[in-house]
Image (cartoon, one colour):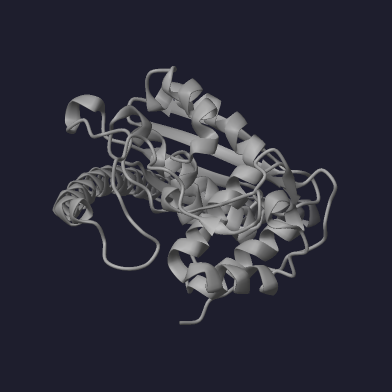
Length: 336
């Protein structure tokens, strides 16, 4: 697999990424590539900080160093969408519980979008996020980088992952997020269309699903990766190596069913989006037909005006010829 990475760029003092994001990123690397893969990623990123400093959620990482870590993680895990997957896990991290509680207190995904924009700025500075539109089951979010700056694709995908999981905080299925414009790919800003199924259209799901990132952490006392206690009420018992616990195996079918339900809900959202696009296309076609009819009428009017102008020109030519004859007759009479 070929994994493309983004250039790290220059470090800017006021451009940084939250320690929460870095901690989740390292957990994903360890879960996917093990301790050896984690060490390899840190070496590839030329990371000089100690583990305690690196995973301290109270510290921030300069943007260039954070991008280097994302690039290394993508290479080691073979996951080019690592930014998206980090975003999908951030809201389920213990380190973000306070922010998540505030978001849940707003009652719905639509009401929470405005709070999420400030969370996006906290997780990665250097851009301004605003909500352009909110309607039942739909929202439009725009993230604009500072003047002279360009967002990295990893951060664009991080934002998409966070927006995807927002409805899940309220017991709904994840959102269908489409990035219509991307700053990292030449756009002036990143514009995300966020669509979710209303609460009365889906089965309410458990708001605390198990997460791969909650199964590993880093012990700040000595820098060694360790397994943290069960997360978000999940009472599974697993080990770093060896066979999964029996309870994990029993829950496997449940997780598969949940994935199928999620896929079904996403398919419904896609179908509704396709129906909406088709309706807009038909309306655009009808508008084009009306415009064509109007153009035909204008063309016919132009042809009629042109014909009348030619007829007027011909009449003027005849009048001129008559005037010439009268003048000739007058000169002949004068000469006689």
